Image (cartoon, rainbow, N blue to C red; front, top):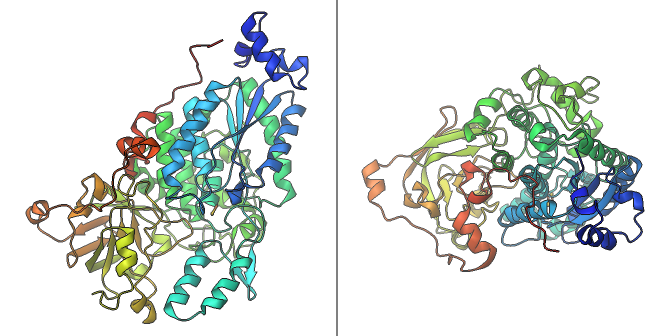
Length: 568
Ligand code: FES
């Protein structure tokens, strides 16, 4: 089978002349002989995505590996999303990054691609793009940063920001000490060092079979990451020669492996929407309920923040993802392939646990059941999710009085008011923060607790929203309520004072108000003006709900790599 790139470069006509001539710039004649796979390096390096700012160095190692294997490496900068910088929320731009990357992979003369990501949305966007084009592809995750310390105590990125800022609000930590911790938080290059969304999606990418096995979780400054990047460059050339495509790797079995992995590592709830979106691009049948069914009974084995104590460099030191997966090997699909051409389980043979305080044995888990629970009820007809591993066990069955906020701004304005009618048994409800309503479904679902309750020592309450939460956050937090308030979901009809009933064991989330009364109420949607132009307009008009992965409705299904026309 001729290489795809030879459709641009082979022949003696004017068009092939143009394609070759402009690409030469130091490339040898042999680069265009039709035998050398042209490998794009889709690189999300950016100074404004600090977690990915080191990826140019990783790209250099990939390039060396591509050359050594007889390919031609080509740097392809793609849309990058820095979680801490991009407003109004990076999730608004995930689909834009995926769409732009998909189109550039398809439009260019390439045969395969190495995907370099790290910060939260970058690996999901790259995988969505690769799934849509279905060119041979492999991910190199940029790796977590090393652990910083403050006053002798390790700091977990994100998780400790939430914890320390709550301590300031509670009056147990001075503002000055809080600010001094800032320079200790980010010790090195790399993404957040907790099992937040970036670490989760790196591990999930490996469980899906889309990395060179053993790569996810290598700390960003560790020289072994560059070694793996070099090997991955060579693998990309092999993938093209073998015609091994994402659709052969990311099968339903691989997605179920990813769900088992998600539970065993105590991964982020954000993986739910990302996996649903990636599966949607491939036409793989994956539903919200698969997360509950497949994750149920999977033990939590990685003792990492936010569900546990340790951080990502501890996980790598203790044996890495493979050691975790080895403990749950019987729950994994033995047939699900990786980019190596061998099944995921075939790569677990040599895995060992070196520190059982970080990676627990199956017989001694942190929690016996760590799966993400999918709730339904008259508050969430199309589902909502909760991560019981990060919740307070005593709140998993709870009845309380709703205290409703119509928007993030409403929350910020009233939360700390001494007049707010709230106690520790109340249920905080935030609406207007879903895919359409915000728009972009921000990570505000772990709403802060009212200051007067923090001062009383309260550290967790039941919270419900149509938003997401940071993978570094924790608490008894119900997220992704679908349909969202702005799409006509029942959250829009809840009023302060309504009794809310959460029963995680029964997988129920209800408001105890007669159906007729609820239906008769005027829905409340917040006052954010619908965008009239640009990406936001396209997004709001076409974004699907959380149970469908928050992708755009016209981007589901693969389009392949064919380009029908030529302008020269
Ligand atoms: Fe980039 Fe956490 S902010 S991974």
